[in-house]
Length: 255
Image 1 (cartoon, rainbow, N blue to C red):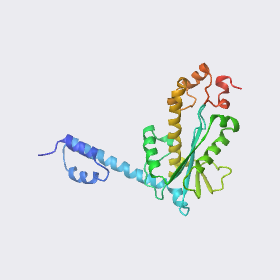
Image 2: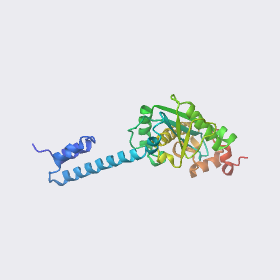
Image 3: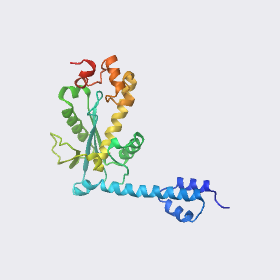
Image 4: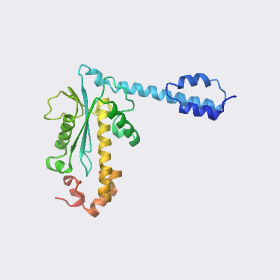
């Protein structure tokens, strides 16, 4: 009995990347419009996958350049700009020739994709370290120095000692390990991109938890950044314990 267009379409949609070429050979001669459209969608899906493999290979340029180093660690931070919450740094050592696809600057990924990649990175990474700097510490020593502290903490929490650091733009003081600062590194290095995802997901989850404690400010949606609703709540209710006092002088009359 001849397969229906619906059955064939469903089969192509459900196929793995590895299965698609076989299905193309099986159905590319079918003249039904629905089948031809399903095959074409499958071809576009396969092409997008192949392009992502090439992009991912290009993202390992620095890892290949410094391949003589055994444990290359990507470093990135999230949360320098918000009015509330900590700054969080991620340190990630990926395996050599890492095959994880879709890693990118965390800001360029959807929340769903970041969450998916976070789980994959945590499972496949050689080591992951996370560092924090509290709002109080940010107020005490300024955001740049607090960011450096969070980065040093993230490095110290790695289960494997790195012999090279690939950093997103900065050179971290008081670190003896060789460092390579890369401008916009979270979009140019797979290791830094992985670190940005780990830091972003970690901080976002923390801000969702803070939202349950301080629901007036909408932390679950704004993550502590200066969204209009957040600023209005700040003016109405004043700061809560996780606000950065040095960041909110124009909004809450802090001195």
